[in-house]
Amino acid sequence: LAVERAQDARLVVVTRGAVAVDAGEPVRDVARAAVWGLVRSAQSEHPDRFVLLDLDPGTGVESVADADEDTDTGVGGVDVAGFVACGEAQLAVRGGVVRVPRLERWGRLGGSGGGLSLPGGVGWRLDGGGSGMLEGVGAVASDAAGVVLGRGQVRVAVRAAGVNFRDVLVALGMVPGQVGVGSEGAGVVVEVGPGVEGLVVGDRVFGVFGDAFAPVVVAQEVLLARIPQGWSFAQAASVPVVFATAYLGLVDLAGVRRGESVLVHAAAGGVGTAAVQLARHLGAQVYATASEGKWARLRAAGIAPQRIASSRSLEFEDRFRRASGGRGVDVVLNCLAGEYTDASLRLCSPRGGRFLELGKTDIRDAGEVADRFPGVSYRAYDLMDAGVQRVGEILHTVVDLFRRGVLEPLPVTAWDVRQARQALRSMRSGRHVGKNVLTLPAPLDREGTVLVTGGTGTLGSAVARHLAAGHGVRHLL
Image: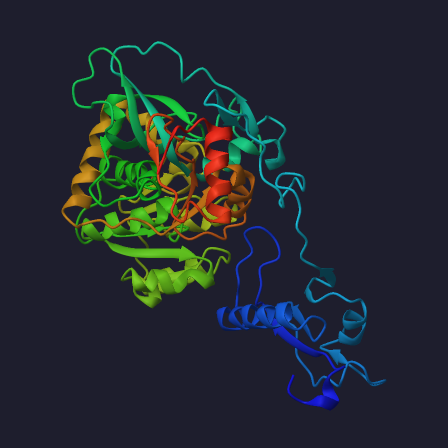
């Protein structure tokens, strides 16, 4: 910028993996992402002097000549001069396709780029749609806000809801007869039914309930607990199903004892992360699989490197057999399918091994498993198989373990509820670590007071006017 003879020149800054292009795509190089931020600022002050070009993370970078010269200006086979000539200031190349940033009205893009269009009020919930595609997820009518509460029932205004892999399967039409999505969440009690003694209006609660992707739900008191002090709604919504499912499997069904070994598949996911914590609490030796990019989290959880393997390769069978001295493992918590399930069954100890199936796409016959793998007991299970009363007891036991510092909340990725399709898509592709959560905005209390800082400025006064005219707010400070 300071050189007079270069006033007509443009500087092309080439990066790899510095920006996210598609919904859910990670930024792979945080340092170069900061470079994009810096150069964007320079672009706003000096138009037409800088071009930002982000290539696929694996693209090789060669020397680049001045884009205005008649020379080879390729970068790893990419025609940089052609990009500069098109006049765009920011470009990304993914799989040979050129992508440029554009502003678009929210929801118009559809598919992976846009958000759901939701009705006003609280009379709706998200539904799988029954189309067999994630694009079928959308809002349908719900009477949860107005139905008369029965004995032991509680009406909850939902602030966050946990996303589970079952929701992905339901949305994809892989759970016959099911279209409702969402089975856990957190929010505020707005009404209690007859016989409810442990909760009152205004309590912050979390727990297990159906049709959770909604602003209002009806839940059973026995399946709710008060949110521990200091937890956000998103944190609370990430806990009930995964920890209760892992506890039911490891404690009630497998009866894991100190000194035994437990193999947890997909150990960086929701149930997997919970199961690792609980297995270690029970004194078990943990073996775990996950995609290689998530191994650092498993090591941080205290799992020895020789007991970590990829969930996308059958090599885990030989690796874990060597690590166990040929004994195999006592308990398998499985969510894989096909030949991966076969390999896991072979790892299960013939001396009383217990194989617990959480997946829904490859459920085996327990008798056939017993014939093929003598000494191994097989059981496929769902959380609610335990019954409402037992699930409630497990939830409160888990809460107590959190209060005692035995367990820690999972890593949480929060998505606005209008991004439900993107959240499900991210989960289907296995990109997440820990738990995905959908957040729902708290409605404005028209009788309450809204504080607008800087309220007499241009933006502040516009916000105040919108609150009064658009939302009926009458008390503005």
